[in-house]
Length: 209
Length: 259
Image (cartoon, rainbow over all chains, first blue to last red; front, side, top):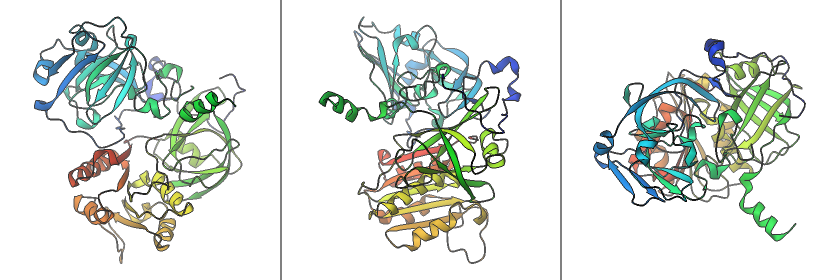
């Protein structure tokens, strides 16, 4: 940021005029607004039957807790309207989700005081790491509904973690559980050169950013 | 350098900061009516792995910036420069600049190489299966070029789906790779009509086509799939149904946007 600014000859930019000035301040640096919902994942989409699906909170907790799909559905639910930003540069405004707050899930376990981080793990083997303070106080949720419809498999269904204030690779698709940990351990993309935390407003895209 | 430092460097190669650098456009060449390959000279070039991409950043005079990612089309054996193939997207903020404004001699800000999963190295001995839809062929072409440059001898097969023959990117280069008879073979399918005498497939990629092309590579095959979401989803599902272990299928998806 401190080097003399390079200017691209003849570049004016689109500046997302469709977004409108009142919403331009909701688009993080280097991002553009899309109305589509692009799909990005590293391998085949895992298919989990609802009768086989479980969600577990484990690790540094007194007793791990596991929900079946039916038990999960019986938890207190709410909806969220949030902006999401993918490290591949797209931002989608006003996405509408329904699901269960991570706060609600954590109410069912007794956290070990050493728990400071967590790994979200998924069907298909995906993992991503998060500091505990990034997923509490209503900031993160496990969503099973997008735009009023059951979450499609390619977007992470039956259920995905959503942590809207971080780049979207932190919002683990096909999430199967949360493992509480004492230290921060890089997940899948974080081990492959992506940033350990991933704050879009700080452009924490890659390691060292 | 101390041993500790050397060990730290060895185990944390990904920790290096990716710096922006100012590349110079050496040349560009049309691939199709909508796809163009830009050759960029990089002052801080370093070898990539086939399948990786670079980020491009454009900056307006008032500081406004736009960024996009583009796959590297060239092999890492080419020192000092990279090829990026960019498809012109309607209303694409960056692609329209690159197609409409950028000229040889212009400078452009880039950083990379980026991506550590959708990558392939010619030292991997297993048979290589590649499935491309549209401009998804770009990172897979880098793999085939790398294989040729490194004299890889593992069997490799590319199945490439385009709408029409005019939409085929790298047509001549693919024909040359196929004709070299060094174990790399190219299969093509056209989904919206084929010219007279077309010897390839003429339908969307399906399970039967995947079996026909990839079953001869055996069960140890490593497969890379790159293209639009619908193609990648259906191909990956069909490969899993064929019995290819999910961890041997790597995917890269181009969403409906991606200008």
